[in-house]
Structures are given as C-alpha cells and as structure tokens.
Length: 80
Image 1: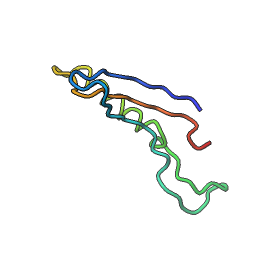
Image 2: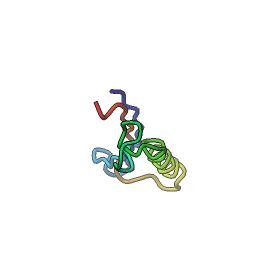
Image 3: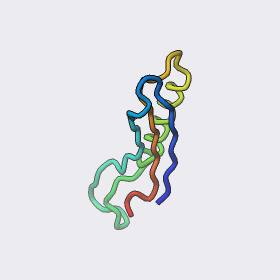
Image 4: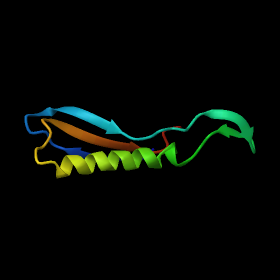
C-alpha cells in the first residue's frame, strides 16, 4: 500500500488536525458483467482525488489560513 499525503500547518492550534481522505470505492453492485458485479468507474478514485485537490488548493489560496492543521491523505491498494 502506498500513501500520498499533504499538510497545511494550522495557525492557532497546529497540534489539532482535520483529515481529508479520498477514495470512493465503487458505485455499488449489480448483476455480474463478465464475472464482475462491482460498478467501477471514474468515481472509483479519480473523482474523489480531484475533489480533495480542489479543497487543498482552496485552502492554499485563501486569505486566512486554517486554525487547525489540515492533512490530505490519498491511500492506494486499500482493498488489500
């Protein structure tokens, strides 16, 4: 398993953390197609990762920095 992480240090309570993590496992299950019943797709991981990157960018571009530290965590191979 690999993890990519980002960190923004809080201004008032840097020892307290808000954690954003991205991985939407799948869109549900249904009748098997070619033996696979999981509805995989872009939301399997990519959409959630993009969502989190936009949140990180908004934090960095904001006029005021967050009071608490913010961690952005992107795990891979979480199914294993």
